[in-house]
Image 1 (tube, rainbow, N blue to C red):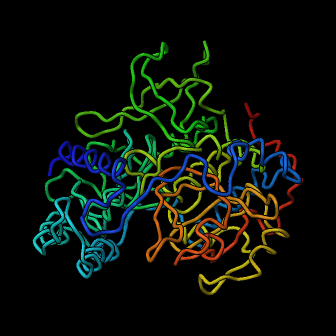
Image 2: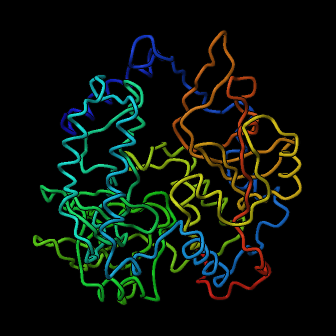
Length: 475
């Protein structure tokens, strides 16, 4: 199915959802709309100020520049959950890449997955993908090339745009969507599909297939020069438009929160900041161009890591649509946290389970059954804007306590409420504020019941009273 027809089919299915509340496949689970104000919340709770006012130290610096650098190095070098693209080459093991590319073929074939039309995926699909991946062309030692993402790019498990679903009509959850990469993301290129239209890249937090037309390659020295520029701009809006002229009329693309661009030395005028953006020449090579971004959308350097900063950045995303793995240019639960914390310079891993392994672990729980210790841990050690709450397959940012209830902000697709026989699934499909008792009484239990890890994004030996003078001024 073409991308145009897929989008058309998706719109039709969503249209039916909105009016009848039924799943696309007759006899499957019914879905219901969630109210605008989620149960357990009030209109005031939907602002950053509400939670900042209740925070015991909203402006305390959690980590200074050195502390954040050490945090990222620990996650990269010791935990091996993120990657410094500059250190991927110059050679990469062909045997390792072969195993990496072969693995999803075997694992997905064991599952019953569905195509857009509702048919079960046939073995011929996997054979076609294996041919496209061209495993036999992988050398013993791969000479790594480098580049930058030139436009927002979906990062795929296989080199194809065709989606696969765990359930018929489950259009919001494409099992082949691995992640997404923003304009300006540095990548290491390891392999090409047999038709040359897709390339396999390693990014800072994920690896996968992207369209070749969305990558501009460059020599290692040029990548180093751009990545090592001292002056840089950080996107602090949910989506910042990039233009090719100072008058902001020639549109190029948008960048999501937390994206970083080297600053062009030319001074900004009329509320516009000049940055360096990557463009792709016809031969696939990199051309560095000047891009123009409104000053309201950027900060020069990282923001200061305080609870206020994180809460304010998180609430800029409130009601932003949910997007599994960055589908449709949006964000899922872990993408949401990546974008928010990237504004202060913290690089989080891609997946929720990996994100719960960084920072300081306050508590872990063996299963998803209720545990009386959880409220106590949050009351005594939880820090609004600093504490992450992991569930199986989901992660949330703790905001604080109100009326003795814990609250969080998170990108969520749906929640459950008890019904007659079956739970009702209420679709939110956006970034929301909820209390952790949401879902109480359902077969899966409340959010709090399902929390399996509580961790703080701080360094164990960091002096949180550091001045933060290494940071640029906040806007």
